[in-house]
Image 1 (spheres, rainbow, N blue to C red):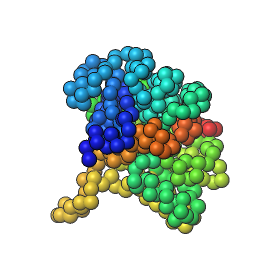
Image 2: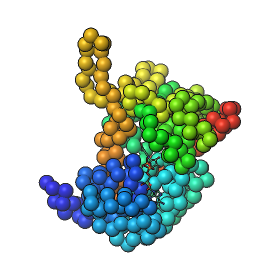
Image 3: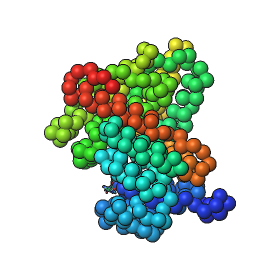
Image 4: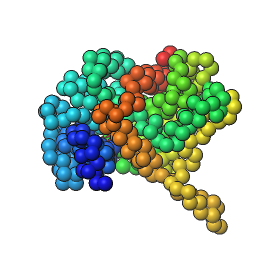
Length: 348
Ligand SMILES: NC(=O)c1ccc[n+]([C@@H]2O[C@H](COP(=O)([O-])OP(=O)(O)OC[C@H]3O[C@@H](n4cnc5c(N)ncnc54)[C@H](O)[C@@H]3O)[C@@H](O)[C@H]2O)c1
């Protein structure tokens, strides 16, 4: 069955617009244009004309906006996907909800808890609209299975999570250019591990954090107060703990890995950044290839995530990632960032 046939059998497609066509926005746009059942990518927004040209020529998007205000008010849109700099997320999510659109916004929802609360207050006034935050790992089949195993009691009572998000070094300096709007290494990368830890440990309340970090390669981060390698410890209630590591400087590839330890066993997700199941053994040793970046590691999860958003907007299922979880991830990420700068443990 073609995409058009499927849409016909489901009723009219959800008319989606995307704002932000950078590193990740282009991937979400391709997914919406060619691979998401029940959706049609009809509009795109970016302040960069070359990105809009790309949307027109490569994806056939018909309506293009340099102005976010005009984009979000377009009556021809049912839903918007926001893949813009993190510092814009809260205000753009609010504008979209006020304009009557369902919203998918990339993680983190905002850099501060007050902004998350502002979004939640507006969302409460629009209960018929979906507001979903892009915690993509919840859609990764391996993480989803680990969480289901825990819920079924496979490792007893889970109490420790050790989780890392480590990017391959990018010598182009992308991470330095990206840093002023990202919220810093912990807010940008570790917010995924924070959300995972809460999900795996049963959403415990976070009490206190400690963080430290260093610059191994990218000196350009120093004037921005950012780091390229960092470690954080999160104390949750009832003795639950998370140990989080983030890096921008791995030599071999992108390595996201999480270990969940319980009273009756442990689970390990993503060991060794393996690209596939091929292991080469020769005179030099035993080795496998590594995934290059987050998109290669989580490509399938990004597709499932967008499908879940579209299904929620169409009323087929409840939004799987709620604003309260997103706000809690920001609250913990902000406390970790405070601790990095103060050198002290910080209350959450
Ligand atoms: N889920 C994940 O694993 C994951 C991975 C990477 C990035 N992200 C998130 O996605 C977001 C974007 O990250 P990126 O790496 O694609 O960044 P990027 O800098 O490559 O892209 C940002 C895009 O936003 C556009 N933009 C800037 N101002 C705008 C405005 N006012 N209105 C509309 N568009 C505007 C830029 O032109 C660019 O296309 C960030 O919030 C980041 O945290 C999530």
